[in-house]
Image (cartoon, rainbow, N blue to C red; front, side, top):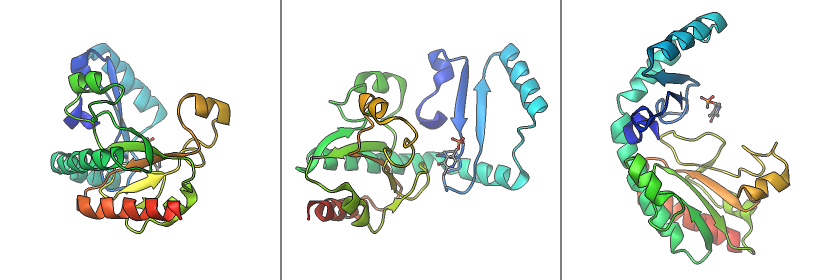
Length: 208
Ligand SMILES: *Cc1c(COP(=O)(O)O)cnc(C)c1O
């Protein structure tokens, strides 16, 4: 979400933990994180711990992060505009069984997301109907890369069951909705028609 789309301290959180590796950096070229608080006592404890464990970001990564944050607003406007279009495209597609995107009015959590954030962000998950070959879907993509990361300017897809969440036992995965057919899409800032064409090519490949 980033502070551009959601401000948890204003919603009552004591500490906000950001992965700056994702949208704050925004270009898939650095690993960084931050903990933010508006409580002086917590801040002192955090600073003490950071100093003690030596979690310090290097100068070049700091430079990249500062540089990335300068375009956070314009990037996220485009990311989320694209994501909204793509979620609607997927939702009406005959091959798509379910779309998980909190910006869709009939999504679970839509109301709470609307209350707490500016929009639904740019992460979408979806499932294809049985009979579609998910491996062929990934192979059919040309523009969107298969990768674990998210939040960069380029669109990325991943297969959580065999990638990010492969270490979780299958029965627990299934219980929380990370099925073998689940596809996760980090929507980039490319021209949205190009992303949709690519998804369409993937789905057509999966059908064959
Ligand atoms: C998210 C991510 C990490 C971990 O970064 P955190 O800031 O700890 O979340 C590392 N590598 C890749 C490729 C990632 O996408």
